[in-house]
Image (cartoon, rainbow, N blue to C red; front, side, top):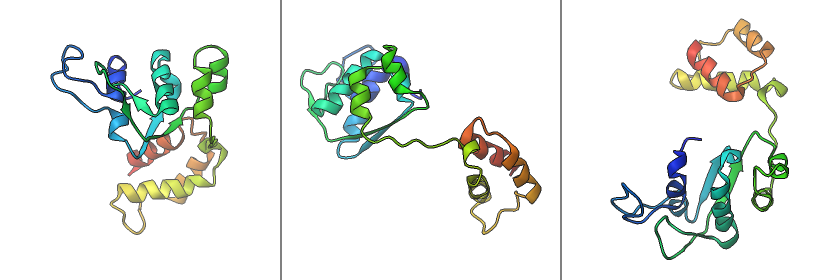
Amino acid sequence: GALNENLLESDFFGHTKGAFTGAFSSRKGIFATADGGTVFLDEISNLPLGLQCKLLRVLQEHEIMPVGGKTPLTLDVRVIAATNTALDKMAEAGKFRHDLYFRLNVVTLKIPGLRDRPEDIPLLAQHFANQRSGNQVQSKCLSPQALKVMLNYHWPGNVRELKNAIDHAC
């Protein structure tokens, strides 16, 4: 979601000089830059079907083809993908490739929403408050009344919403 949809392939796999208008020089993509490391793909469910096929090649063949390139590059990259969408249901509906789903679904971690783990709210709130106040020993932003309000709130925006609320309060 943070990348320009028209340039996703170039952002992921790089491009050669002259591959498209504005490609004044060759550039490594995210995967080539991460060679020997890890690529984290947030909201993988938003990946267009055409790019899903190319990502499948990365996972199966361990290689990429830069846009405009003629020779594939071999890579050693671990891919971690996250989504808040049921990919299995998307695959059944034809909106996500089955083969990519099975390649990505090696280890699944299901993390419940913040509303389902209220015991984490005080710890996270204090951590964000300390972060915001320059890591002082104890931030002065949080009162017992504020914590009570936070514990009774539903947190539809999850941890990001909690962090924003603490930033605003501080």
